[in-house]
Amino acid sequence: MAGGIDACLSCSAMLCTRTLDRSMDKIKQNTLHGEVAVRIRDMIDAGTLAPGSRVPEKQLCEQFGVSRTPLREALKVLASEGFVELLPNRGARISKLTIDTLQHTLEVMSALEGLSGELACAHISDAELANIEALHYQMLAYYKNTNMAEYLLTNQQIHEAIVVASRNDVLIDVYKNLNQRVRRVRFSAELSREYWAKAVQDHEDIIAALRRRDSETLGQILRRHLSDKVEVSSLADMAEPKNLL
Amino acid sequence: MAGGIDACLSCSAMLCTRTLDRSMDKIKQNTLHGEVAVRIRDMIDAGTLAPGSRVPEKQLCEQFGVSRTPLREALKVLASEGFVELLPNRGARISKLTIDTLQHTLEVMSALEGLSGELACAHISDAELANIEALHYQMLAYYKNTNMAEYLLTNQQIHEAIVVASRNDVLIDVYKNLNQRVRRVRFSAELSREYWAKAVQDHEDIIAALRRRDSETLGQILRRHLSDKVEVSSLADMAEPKNLL
DNA sequence: GCTTCAAGAACTGAATTCAAAATATAAAAT
DNA sequence: ATTTTATATTTTGAATTCAGTTCTTGAAGC
Image 1: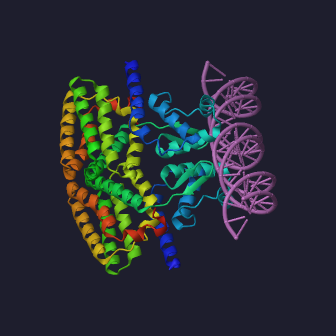
Image 2: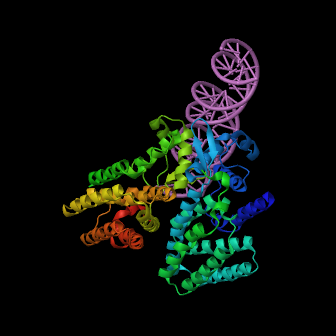
């Protein structure tokens, strides 16, 4: 059981390597503190740094081979992103991801995806649409095979492609950040048969609206799509029990 | 002319003291780098640090009476928030706020306000609604008196109150951050008579929908309200000419 | 006069140092 | 035996230091 969860988490980390995060890397300059921040985020996702535990500065410095200065710079940034909390004179602690915060984050992401959909209808290229259609059929295949890990990955890629098609850099940036925050639990979700079927139907509608460039409809669907997930799916499974405040 | 702009900018800085920013301060711990970040943000808003110019580390250290360590920590955070850009081996530069970025930011804020409206209908208390109604009538008075500065201030307070009423902390946090990013130009906007009348009508509808707890309608209005502003108002006046890329 | 290059000064990024605070350990008292 | 107090150790926050880079200045060459 624990092994299964671990496997799933590392898969979710891998996913991000394959999708939005790395595709943005062209712009991103390689600062030392930035690299450290990436590593720490990954360790949080992987569970190597447990939510609620203190950040062992010295140990991480040795592990990364850097001094405390860039590490602490990274911690300030991670704090402003919500990954850690700064405790006065007690360093930093890994943030817990409560069900409330998860719900709130997915609500905001829904709103952003809704906007993405509207904007994407105005800006998407034929090539991008074709790519999304291809991902869609691939996803349907995974659904039919009950391959949930690959389904979730492809599903995520579709949503990211729509966000990118919005051509709104602020939107892309904020969405990416929020997605990172919930990464550690999103891909450990166990979808119920019922919900899964509903999500797939949503995606059929999403593709149809996108083909028609029907921004109104696409916006509506996407604003509900993720929020529904929060309500319908086994939310309790997504945020680890120990993370409930 | 320059004096007038300065006055307006300092007013916009003051505004934030009176509204969302400080009301959140209960939670916020006073870290040194955090204080420095606040000061630098204010200096950017006030124009003391000009967009496009390099950040004078040494000078600011002397001015704030701190060493470079906390200052540089603040700069990393400000970079992740988009206020400055980090140039490898060349320190930090104050970000320019282009018209595109402004437009993109207001679009995202619109989407967030739309969600706020929907959530506020479900969660708003009678006291909060009464407060918003009071602000609304106050704002109408400023409109009739053609007092644009106070109008914009009160307008902002209404929108913030709705966002807070959403009871979604992630939403409040992201909105606050985006609002900060555009603070420096938002309150220097010159509204046309025509647009101004339209905005006021929107607000009548907003209050009405809020009273009815009509989340559908309120969401729709709010999703358009700010975006319209972008299209209708004198956008060119909002982003300083020198900020156009 | 203008450009090119070199030496020095200033600045940046990151490691190190140091004082203050927190934590752990050990001794004393109940 | 348990709690309290005192001391030592560790950790944190921030200043300082230092190597490497960029910028400035001025002389040499075209």
